Amino acid sequence: MRKSEKVIISCAITGSIHTPSMSQHLPITPQQIADQAVGAIEAGAAIVHLHARIPKTGRPSQDTALYAQFLPEIAARCDGIINITTGAGLGMSMDERLAAANWAKPEIASMNMGSFNFNISAAAGRITNFKHDWEAPYLASTTGFILSNTFEQIERGLRELTENGTRFEFECYDVGHLYNLAHFVNRGLVKPPFFIQCIFGILGGIGPEPEHLMHMKATADRLFGNDYYLSVLGAGRHQFPMVTLSAILGGNVRVGLEDNLYLGRGELAPSNAAQVSKIRRVLEELSFQIASPDEARAMLGTKGRDNVGF
Image 1: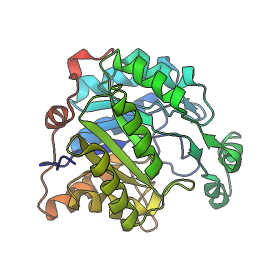
Image 2: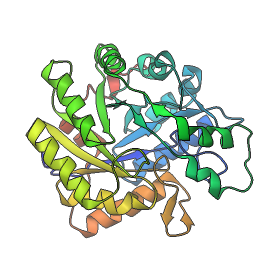
Image 3: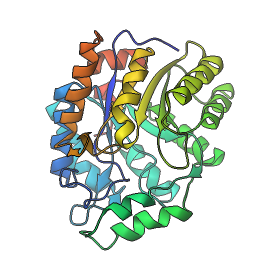
């Protein structure tokens, strides 16, 4: 692993997991997404990970017309690295999932490194009144849902987006996903340095235990040596402990309302920037320095903000 001299903070702004009924602070409209992304960069994030949503209902969408309403504004207002999802919303086709990243040609796009059971249905039991008809069935359906990214799908995404100069946030929900990434590395489809996002706490993936993080890191060290940067996200209440451990181990961190709606026990986060500010305080108290967007660009080898498609 390449030890990060300065810690890269990524912030996942809205995602496709949480629904509008879960928090009034979840950004939904293009303007809300833009404002919260800029706020996260100003608070100390180097990277913002972005999804789009239908403004009237909050339902996840990969409509490029929606991305066009917030990507140029974010780029005009701050210098952050923009990372576009290819996981998108649950049940979308591969054409839908890749549409925004193929159009935007961002510096970074996410890439799930395997298929697995993805269950977020428990969230429905904590909500008594849903705002929109789609929310309860969307959550409940995940008891029978497989988040699909087959080898064929991964290869398609890697080939198409690499042609645009886009690099990747390789999202690994379990140990096997690291071996899947190694398969594509060995075939020469992706080049170092690899930005590996280890994800802990999604039901169906690896659990949010420190020992599991140590195992994921040891496996990645064995497979990729000094050719990768570690980053970590923890779902829900596991967010801040798991990402802090990542920094202690020499890695990087991801926070944001996609992964966790809370700032502390029982306290909804008022914004993405509030989560970034909190983890920045924690890291600086531990004497870590925070990477600027340009420092993160140099570490990850991105093509630069002037070479995107928006």
